[in-house]
Image (cartoon, rainbow, N blue to C red; front, top):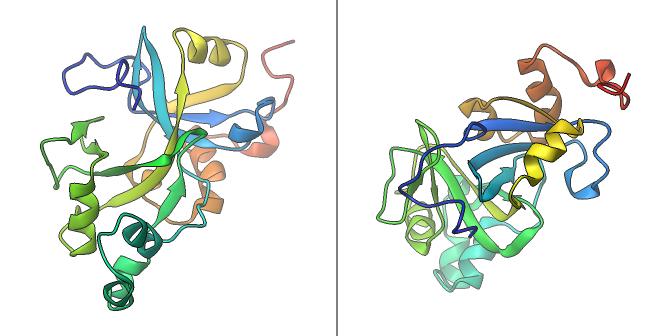
Length: 201
């Protein structure tokens, strides 16, 4: 998991805890109209999670695949647990699961990524959520977005991304289709105002 970028004891980079909002000029289909939460940024690169792409798998699917529950137990899960949101976090390591969550849940493997938000990528949090003992706010993401040294900075300089401070309520909001426009609203702009030629006058 981008171990050279994300670890427990590190200085935060200037993009840590920021949203990346894709500009219309974004040529990579993986990131068109995406909102990304940057969890780690340093001279070694950056990693983050797409916040507005759905994932077909359900939480019971994940529990069955990981053999945490059997089918009979999965059927008996409370509705709120069955409906726990799974999202597509990015094109890198799409078979790996990560949980972004509020800091009211902490395990030995939890990593703070902002003042109020942590990341846990081990089975203990999945088991806790399945028992109704997980964090108050959380979302599971399969895969992540990663950049090599200097790559993200170059993409921003080439007008690929807008940046703004992340907002917790938007990270955990279940209305994925609305996140792109809502993230732009944080900056006081709308998608209609953006031009693919912005910054290249």
